[in-house]
Amino acid sequence: MTSTQLMEQICSSTNLNQALRRVKKNKGCAGVDKLDIAATISVLRQSSNGQALRQSLLDGSYQPQPVLGVEIPKPSGGVRQLGIPTVLDRIVQQAITSVLTDIYEPKFSNSSYGFRPNRSAHHALAAASHYIREGRGYVVDVDLAKYFDTVNHDRLMHRLSKISQINGY
Image 1: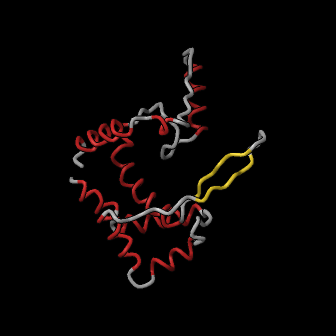
Image 2: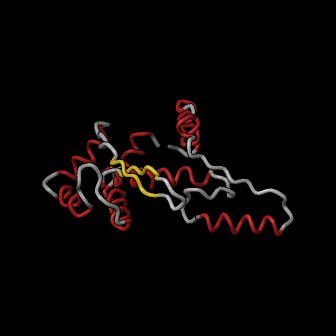
Image 3: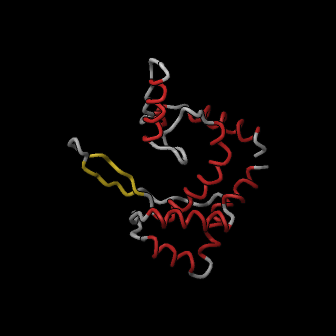
């Protein structure tokens, strides 16, 4: 499958509608454009806005909006910066995530739990408890908080493209 075919899969009506349903289910708030999910759906339904979104994704002209920065208090004191994309940008992100997850998820280690479908911190703790009961002496917890700030993006994209080529994309 070519990258064009991959983008067509991402931009299919079925995939975009599923992405919209996932975003709606999450009940997130509006981003910098101040459009909540209902308002975004209304805009997409107007004339050819849904088709214009699809076309802008396919031709590479889609431009995500700035992210709304919000500070939320931490239980231990202080604040954590949270970025809230627009609902439309979240729909696009979900559409991309859905297709790419099918390609890359099988490549991840079974021992990895962070930000994985059907896995949580509770699953990680259960696995760690199991390893300890088996007599293993170490459990490793790695936080990749700043990883994407420092990774060589050219090398990362090259590696990802090799995996997708192996899978026929």
